[in-house]
Amino acid sequence: MIEGRRVLAVVPARSGSKGIPHKNMRPLGGKSLIAHAGDCLASLRWIDRRIISSDSESYADEGGRHGLEAPFLRPPELSTDEAAAIDVMVHALEQCEQEYGERYDLVAIVEPTSPFRRPGDIEFACLGMVRGGCDSAVCVSPAGTQSHPLKMLTVKADRLGYYDPAAENIISRQQLDPLYVRNGACYLVTRETLLEKRRVITDNTFACVIDRPMVNIDEPMDLEWAEFLLRRKKKRKKS
Image: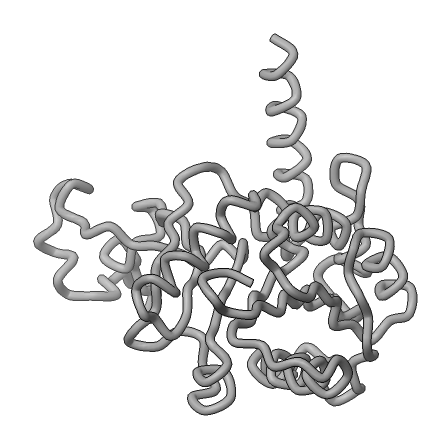
Protein backbone atom coordinates (compact mmCIF):
# COMPACT_ATOMS: atom_id res chain seq x y z
CA MET A 1 0.00 0.00 0.00
CA ILE A 2 1.22 3.49 -0.84
CA GLU A 3 -0.37 6.72 0.39
CA GLY A 4 -3.33 4.64 1.55
CA ARG A 5 -3.86 3.01 -1.86
CA ARG A 6 -3.73 -0.72 -2.54
CA VAL A 7 -1.61 -1.52 -5.59
CA LEU A 8 -1.82 -4.41 -8.06
CA ALA A 9 1.25 -4.84 -10.30
CA VAL A 10 0.71 -6.69 -13.57
CA VAL A 11 3.46 -8.04 -15.82
CA PRO A 12 1.84 -8.67 -19.24
CA ALA A 13 3.71 -11.44 -21.05
CA ARG A 14 1.98 -13.26 -23.87
CA SER A 15 3.90 -15.98 -25.70
CA GLY A 16 3.12 -15.14 -29.33
CA SER A 17 5.65 -12.44 -30.19
CA LYS A 18 6.44 -12.18 -33.90
CA GLY A 19 9.42 -9.81 -33.97
CA ILE A 20 11.41 -11.97 -31.52
CA PRO A 21 9.97 -15.45 -30.92
CA HIS A 22 9.35 -16.01 -27.19
CA LYS A 23 10.64 -12.51 -26.60
CA ASN A 24 9.61 -12.31 -22.95
CA MET A 25 11.72 -15.37 -22.13
CA ARG A 26 14.81 -14.18 -23.96
CA PRO A 27 17.84 -13.76 -21.71
CA LEU A 28 19.49 -10.42 -21.05
CA GLY A 29 22.51 -10.38 -18.79
CA GLY A 30 21.87 -13.97 -17.73
CA LYS A 31 18.16 -13.77 -16.89
CA SER A 32 14.92 -13.56 -18.82
CA LEU A 33 13.04 -10.35 -19.48
CA ILE A 34 10.25 -11.69 -17.25
CA ALA A 35 12.82 -12.16 -14.49
CA HIS A 36 14.02 -8.57 -14.83
CA ALA A 37 10.45 -7.31 -14.34
CA GLY A 38 9.71 -9.65 -11.43
CA ASP A 39 12.94 -8.89 -9.60
CA CYS A 40 12.37 -5.14 -9.92
CA LEU A 41 8.86 -5.42 -8.47
CA ALA A 42 10.04 -7.69 -5.65
CA SER A 43 12.02 -4.82 -4.13
CA LEU A 44 8.94 -2.58 -3.88
CA ARG A 45 7.39 -3.67 -0.60
CA TRP A 46 4.47 -1.24 -0.91
CA ILE A 47 3.03 -3.22 -3.82
CA ASP A 48 0.22 -5.40 -2.44
CA ARG A 49 0.08 -8.02 -5.21
CA ARG A 50 2.43 -8.88 -8.09
CA ILE A 51 1.09 -11.07 -10.89
CA ILE A 52 1.94 -12.18 -14.42
CA SER A 53 -0.73 -12.15 -17.11
CA SER A 54 0.22 -14.77 -19.67
CA ASP A 55 -1.26 -17.44 -21.91
CA SER A 56 1.71 -19.76 -21.26
CA GLU A 57 2.31 -22.15 -18.36
CA SER A 58 6.07 -21.88 -18.83
CA TYR A 59 5.90 -18.10 -18.71
CA ALA A 60 3.77 -18.30 -15.58
CA ASP A 61 6.33 -20.67 -14.03
CA GLU A 62 9.15 -18.26 -14.87
CA GLY A 63 7.22 -15.44 -13.26
CA GLY A 64 6.71 -17.58 -10.16
CA ARG A 65 10.45 -18.02 -9.81
CA HIS A 66 10.75 -14.25 -9.57
CA GLY A 67 7.97 -13.35 -7.19
CA LEU A 68 5.03 -13.13 -9.59
CA GLU A 69 1.81 -14.99 -8.90
CA ALA A 70 -0.20 -16.49 -11.75
CA PRO A 71 -3.83 -16.66 -10.58
CA PHE A 72 -5.05 -17.30 -14.15
CA LEU A 73 -3.95 -17.99 -17.70
CA ARG A 74 -4.98 -15.33 -20.19
CA PRO A 75 -7.81 -16.46 -22.52
CA PRO A 76 -7.04 -16.90 -26.26
CA GLU A 77 -8.98 -13.80 -27.31
CA LEU A 78 -6.65 -11.67 -25.17
CA SER A 79 -3.47 -13.41 -26.31
CA THR A 80 -3.16 -12.21 -29.91
CA ASP A 81 -1.20 -9.26 -31.23
CA GLU A 82 -4.54 -7.62 -32.03
CA ALA A 83 -5.83 -7.76 -28.45
CA ALA A 84 -6.19 -4.31 -26.91
CA ALA A 85 -3.80 -3.69 -24.00
CA ILE A 86 -6.59 -2.00 -22.05
CA ASP A 87 -8.72 -5.15 -22.27
CA VAL A 88 -5.81 -7.22 -20.95
CA MET A 89 -5.47 -4.89 -17.95
CA VAL A 90 -9.20 -4.84 -17.20
CA HIS A 91 -9.22 -8.65 -17.32
CA ALA A 92 -6.23 -8.87 -14.95
CA LEU A 93 -7.80 -6.47 -12.45
CA GLU A 94 -11.19 -8.18 -12.45
CA GLN A 95 -9.71 -11.67 -12.22
CA CYS A 96 -7.43 -10.72 -9.32
CA GLU A 97 -10.18 -8.99 -7.36
CA GLN A 98 -12.33 -12.08 -7.76
CA GLU A 99 -9.52 -14.54 -6.98
CA TYR A 100 -8.12 -12.77 -3.93
CA GLY A 101 -11.24 -11.05 -2.64
CA GLU A 102 -9.42 -7.71 -2.61
CA ARG A 103 -10.10 -4.33 -4.19
CA TYR A 104 -7.15 -2.52 -5.74
CA ASP A 105 -7.01 1.25 -6.05
CA LEU A 106 -4.11 1.40 -8.50
CA VAL A 107 -2.82 -0.87 -11.24
CA ALA A 108 0.86 -0.80 -12.22
CA ILE A 109 1.63 -2.19 -15.67
CA VAL A 110 5.23 -3.38 -15.90
CA GLU A 111 6.23 -4.67 -19.34
CA PRO A 112 9.11 -7.18 -19.56
CA THR A 113 10.32 -5.46 -22.72
CA SER A 114 11.71 -2.48 -20.78
CA PRO A 115 14.38 -4.20 -18.66
CA PHE A 116 16.37 -1.10 -17.66
CA ARG A 117 13.68 0.27 -15.35
CA ARG A 118 14.60 0.82 -11.72
CA PRO A 119 12.39 0.42 -8.64
CA GLY A 120 12.70 4.15 -8.06
CA ASP A 121 11.15 4.87 -11.47
CA ILE A 122 7.98 3.03 -10.50
CA GLU A 123 7.82 4.63 -7.06
CA PHE A 124 8.40 8.13 -8.44
CA ALA A 125 5.67 7.62 -11.05
CA CYS A 126 3.24 6.32 -8.44
CA LEU A 127 3.85 9.10 -5.94
CA GLY A 128 3.66 11.74 -8.63
CA MET A 129 0.32 10.40 -9.78
CA VAL A 130 -1.21 10.00 -6.32
CA ARG A 131 0.01 13.28 -4.86
CA GLY A 132 -0.95 15.15 -8.01
CA GLY A 133 -4.45 13.72 -8.02
CA CYS A 134 -3.88 12.28 -11.48
CA ASP A 135 -5.74 9.57 -13.39
CA SER A 136 -2.55 7.81 -14.38
CA ALA A 137 1.22 8.02 -14.82
CA VAL A 138 3.39 7.10 -17.79
CA CYS A 139 7.17 6.76 -17.95
CA VAL A 140 8.67 8.58 -20.93
CA SER A 141 12.08 9.41 -22.39
CA PRO A 142 13.19 12.52 -24.28
CA ALA A 143 12.81 11.96 -28.02
CA GLY A 144 15.79 12.66 -30.25
CA THR A 145 15.44 15.66 -32.53
CA GLN A 146 15.90 13.42 -35.60
CA SER A 147 12.48 11.90 -34.96
CA HIS A 148 10.77 15.25 -34.33
CA PRO A 149 7.68 15.78 -36.55
CA LEU A 150 9.15 19.04 -37.83
CA LYS A 151 12.16 17.08 -39.13
CA MET A 152 10.01 14.57 -41.02
CA LEU A 153 9.73 14.57 -44.81
CA THR A 154 7.30 13.00 -47.25
CA VAL A 155 7.93 11.45 -50.67
CA LYS A 156 5.20 11.80 -53.29
CA ALA A 157 5.86 11.00 -56.96
CA ASP A 158 9.60 10.97 -56.21
CA ARG A 159 9.48 14.49 -54.76
CA LEU A 160 10.37 15.48 -51.22
CA GLY A 161 8.06 17.57 -49.13
CA TYR A 162 7.66 18.67 -45.54
CA TYR A 163 5.37 16.56 -43.37
CA ASP A 164 4.42 19.75 -41.56
CA PRO A 165 4.62 23.04 -43.51
CA ALA A 166 5.81 24.78 -40.31
CA ALA A 167 9.13 22.96 -40.77
CA GLU A 168 10.14 25.47 -43.45
CA ASN A 169 10.75 28.00 -40.68
CA ILE A 170 13.00 25.73 -38.60
CA ILE A 171 16.66 26.55 -39.07
CA SER A 172 18.15 24.97 -35.92
CA ARG A 173 17.23 22.18 -33.52
CA GLN A 174 17.05 24.72 -30.68
CA GLN A 175 13.76 25.89 -32.17
CA LEU A 176 12.16 22.47 -31.69
CA ASP A 177 9.96 21.99 -28.64
CA PRO A 178 11.02 19.00 -26.50
CA LEU A 179 9.04 15.85 -27.24
CA TYR A 180 8.90 12.53 -25.41
CA VAL A 181 8.29 8.86 -26.20
CA ARG A 182 6.90 6.11 -24.02
CA ASN A 183 9.69 3.81 -22.83
CA GLY A 184 7.55 1.04 -21.29
CA ALA A 185 9.18 1.23 -17.87
CA CYS A 186 5.84 1.56 -16.11
CA TYR A 187 2.27 2.65 -16.57
CA LEU A 188 0.07 3.37 -13.56
CA VAL A 189 -3.66 3.90 -13.64
CA THR A 190 -6.40 4.28 -11.05
CA ARG A 191 -9.11 1.66 -10.83
CA GLU A 192 -11.79 4.15 -11.85
CA THR A 193 -9.86 5.37 -14.88
CA LEU A 194 -9.16 1.84 -16.07
CA LEU A 195 -12.72 0.58 -15.69
CA GLU A 196 -14.69 3.70 -16.55
CA LYS A 197 -12.55 5.63 -19.02
CA ARG A 198 -10.79 2.50 -20.34
CA ARG A 199 -7.72 4.59 -21.09
CA VAL A 200 -4.25 5.02 -19.65
CA ILE A 201 -3.34 8.41 -21.08
CA THR A 202 -5.94 11.06 -20.27
CA ASP A 203 -5.85 14.84 -19.95
CA ASN A 204 -4.71 14.29 -16.35
CA THR A 205 -1.71 11.96 -16.71
CA PHE A 206 1.50 12.45 -14.71
CA ALA A 207 4.68 12.38 -16.83
CA CYS A 208 7.54 10.43 -15.24
CA VAL A 209 10.53 11.55 -17.30
CA ILE A 210 13.51 9.16 -17.32
CA ASP A 211 16.58 10.88 -18.73
CA ARG A 212 19.01 7.98 -19.07
CA PRO A 213 19.47 5.23 -21.68
CA MET A 214 16.38 3.03 -21.93
CA VAL A 215 15.48 0.23 -24.33
CA ASN A 216 12.02 -0.96 -25.31
CA ILE A 217 12.66 -4.36 -26.89
CA ASP A 218 10.58 -5.15 -29.96
CA GLU A 219 13.00 -6.26 -32.66
CA PRO A 220 16.26 -8.31 -32.56
CA MET A 221 18.33 -5.14 -32.92
CA ASP A 222 16.75 -3.77 -29.73
CA LEU A 223 17.93 -6.84 -27.82
CA GLU A 224 21.46 -6.47 -29.22
CA TRP A 225 21.46 -2.80 -28.20
CA ALA A 226 20.33 -3.73 -24.69
CA GLU A 227 23.15 -6.29 -24.41
CA PHE A 228 25.65 -3.65 -25.51
CA LEU A 229 24.42 -1.15 -22.92
CA LEU A 230 24.55 -3.81 -20.21
CA ARG A 231 28.13 -4.76 -21.08
CA ARG A 232 29.17 -1.11 -21.11
CA LYS A 233 27.59 -0.58 -17.68
CA LYS A 234 29.50 -3.56 -16.26
CA LYS A 235 32.78 -2.30 -17.68
CA ARG A 236 32.27 1.11 -16.09
CA LYS A 237 31.64 -0.49 -12.72
CA LYS A 238 34.89 -2.43 -12.94
CA SER A 239 36.98 0.59 -13.96
